Image (cartoon, rainbow, N blue to C red):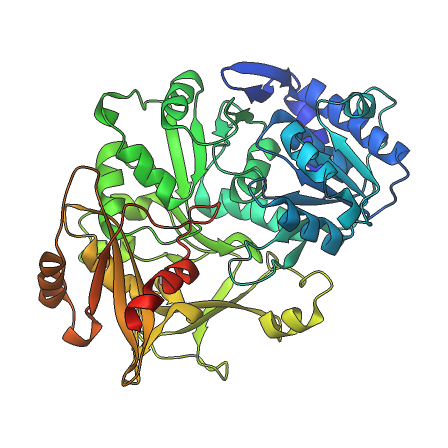
Length: 510
């Protein structure tokens, strides 16, 4: 089902409920939101766009981003939400690669795109959300709701592209509806009195998890900052009822480590769903102590949007289980409508406890990469998505991720998983963040190097860290060098860029 059809149904049942809010103020109810979306859809059609044409959204989190997304679907078009923090040339690549005929952009990003417009000949219409052109889109006759097939493209999801050009994962309306229904089945309940606050980018995980909230008539709240500010986030939690978020793990740690968090009013906080990168055991335990039983973990990819495995709230509260820490340190068990396996390079299941590549299949899995048959053939084999993640199942069916396959360190012919070493380093009370990489070694192939960021105002020494590692992991896994840093390079979603760390570590090997 088209998500715009879902909105139309919700607007009939919950017409007067708050639909879209900016900061602490409600902008519109569901009846007026649906009307606005239909008029914007009519305006997009007046541009000459045809069924299936791509429309890019190069926007910071904003009310216009949300209304435009639903307008695109209402008009029978396909959305290309783009990370607002990318470089203009990266924006140009995505616009050109996707063949977007129109681009709706927030003002400062529209100005950047105007300067490179000649590099994207596929782009016919560039419209800033503060312009008269955008105002005219929503001023005309409402469009009829498109009769869209479930197999048609809905969302062209571009990967973060940390190791080369980003690829466009093709998500159909069926994929999106599968993800929506899975949220209700495995993540959380949603009531019309609830709210979702978009502090993380709406172009990715937060936007995807906004869909089930609209489908149940909840309030969509966009922070005035358009992003994640801890003080603003705490104020919005106080303002809105039944608050849920999608957070990257780094956002959770920033929230729980903010001064005086113990004095904040978190009574309206309902759920924080976290994912997109590993969250280490010590951080999980602290978050539970600070926030209470509000956590849900999900493991997914843009290629299987937010839906492969998960840890529901009841696992976090089952503190008496003999394997409690192992469970909350895992990524949980397969979601209800997804099959998950761990296999060797030939696609054969590996034994329980043995690492292999995680593969999955289900209605949530993308249909392929946009105009990239080679990448599609590599990632989709016999109906299974090969994720590139290394993990292992335990005897209870809980999946623990080791690392991305490209991040595994092979030293002396033995695999070393950086996350295992990072977990140990984070046990030191002075360590805020840790990242472990492999560096070329003439005899061993690779050696282990750790980048360690202490808490502000605290110190830690390499001998302390070495002792900690020797007390907790095998000697061959311990880092050969500990590099203390003030910060770690991250991409726009909070993931540590290990490709950059390898460059920083390389000179020391000379």
